[in-house]
Length: 562
RNA sequence: UGGGGGAUCGUCUAAUGGUAGGACGUCAGAUUCUGGUUCUGAUUGUGGGGGUUCAACUCCUCCUCCCCCAGCCA
Picture (cartoon, rainbow, N blue to C red):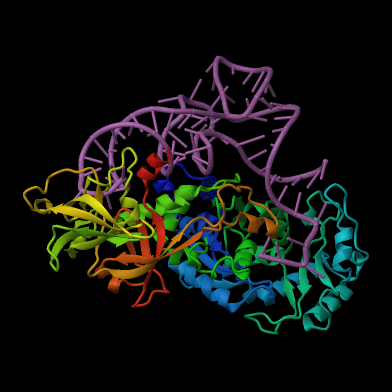
């Protein structure tokens, strides 16, 4: 059986599918679908759904469709339709020739609606939205039937056809399922099937003036496509009786099994389209591809790879309980990927100049640097070494704390791939007293291959040569939401209060090694000892711009915190 | 409150009557020209009370807590 070879234990969905296969349900066929509404950009929560739907179809040698659930033209657009396809492809999933649209089924859906009317299972209601709400009852009280529930078959047919013809105002009528106004499940109290929308649909144009609701269109779309397992999130659990009702009353030949799972929640960020939209529209972030956003476009720009995201989704698992995944899991996934694949380069983000007093002025020599210690085939490159170099501000302390292995007065460190240097003093600004340069001497025998090459010192730090380093801007990101405010829900006001004011830090005066001059946008690098970075699309020849994808783990920072 | 779901290490997630396991995190050690990586070890958990059973995360029962539903959104 093509199922759980890769899983020591299957999740509850795969277990269910396995059972269906064994019982010959659906003739052992497995056909899923990923059905986003084209009303926004995809985010990492959708990635979970894609990994599930496409992943399951692969494991069970089945198929997975991409379906755009475009039943509400007031919120949707062709831009989103395109963006969704780009993102699905980018994540690495292939729907082959099975790209579908709910709007492709509008004609068939209409026929099914007519059939329901003819079978006395649906009626045209002229109650207003407010009246329908009142008639619906409450959680504890049953609803009451609309006067129009008794409308004659012919009248229903005629009105529904008028609705379609565009002869009615928005809100004048709605087609409702005739189920049970006293049902304890509010979704079964004669839910709306069709509503009038005098708007142009991004695909069907002005052909339609009535549009089916999710509850009507979704089960039938599944049936029309031969979907066997219709995976959706927990909030649709009590729509399942309605889902089944529609398929039963429409007498379709394929009755898919709806299975609900818990949606993804990620700590310190937002994963609802509404809130994402708010962040973009109110200018808290710079567009849908802002690297701080958990949108696929944002993650991509930030430097996250499709493999890391897919791996993350696998680690997170699938279950029915509400959960919040720690950012650490996502960060682990991208580090794991990039550690293997990203070439190492030297970059100094908070530069301090070092003058090596005993190194001849004007001399430049080459040192050999390893591109990727995890992958020898990536080879080496030459770095130039000279009298003046930059190191990071964090790698020097005048007053070093205990266990500080880096540079401080009278102490030695190794310059990675270069020499061991010793701090002999500092230059200061006469007025402010600020350090303007650090003075060092070097030990000429300590270069790789030198007589003292094996000499051990506690610390090794990164550096760039002042004479050929390239200026760069580096954008450092933190979580979008403050770690302190964990409560997920809130008003729009609440969201704003939780925003991390330091989610973006721009370092304008960084220096990077010259090899980065021909970096391409998006290619990941490890800035030695710091983290993973990639060139941003804002980058220009004169000023390179990098995004920090994720920092390296930093055990010194932990020690120092104590 | 009616209905529908859910509760297992700090965080995710396995174990459907038979050794509570894995991952992330954390801590400690080893290796390291990245305080990275890798390796080794450690750490901590079945919401509560009854019951059935040789044996309960699992079954029964009572309770507690959390999530979802009163759109002509999905």
